[in-house]
Image 1 (tube, rainbow, N blue to C red):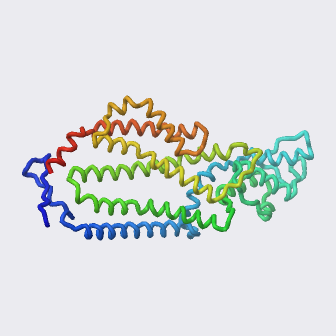
Image 2 (image 1 turned 60 degrees about the vertical axis):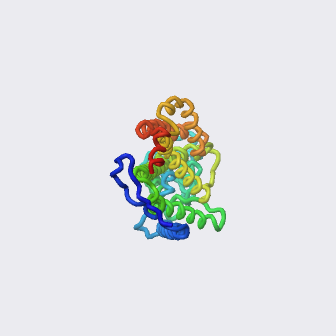
Image 3 (image 1 turned 180 degrees about the horizontal axis):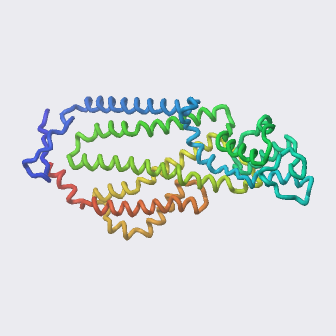
Length: 365
């Protein structure tokens, strides 16, 4: 039986009509068909997103960005090859012959005769450069120093310039099994495809839900959706540009003088995606508090009185989002989250609606 689905807006008075609720006359089967169609559109968007990210991950052309390079950038940026490190490594070889030692200027020739030069052979130069690159990487696996490249180096300054470019451009992770690389590529593609398809997925979900809502509920839902997307992207950017470099600097710098660690591609990609994803989710805190206040569950005053417990909970959340045990990295995550908590208090002050008043429109409808 078809029923009258016209809804009166109680805020505007009895003369203001929102309009008929779309889809209210549909049968259960028709609702399921619509749900299936919207799910297929969302799945197709997800598939296209995965294919697009896969193209930029699986050996893209040189003139296009590589997703692997983007994810490796935080690790590459921490490889600090400096001139003093190269001088120290070369000095160790020179001091093996001359225990008294002396300062090695950048213009000194690697193979030149002493005392102006270092009188080193290609094998000694290669060993010194590999040691410098290994120490600068903090234990990360590093590329080999090619013999042909070594033969072209003449001075200490040229050796430093060579290592600077090599550490930034040719850094690689290790693969411990034949499936490591392919699994890492598809993990990146799935996460990236989901992120690209997220606007379409949200649109299809809203298009299915919104017709059954009032005008005020639609406005709140749409604003909340855009707010969640904004805070999600802000959290992911914060994780990539701020948290990851500090976490890698701590983890890869522990005992790096005595331990050479080989980081696998699967472990590294899982580590990076975990931090980016969880911090992005943690940044939803203001929206969670805003929704809770809107439905009348909490007030801004209650949240302010809860601030001592909020500090503890925020640091627990930061510890979950960051796998590093050092307090510095956790504080880098926790302090912005604490600021987001008080931003959520402000949202709660603006959006709070007593639970009894929130139920009035439903009763009037």
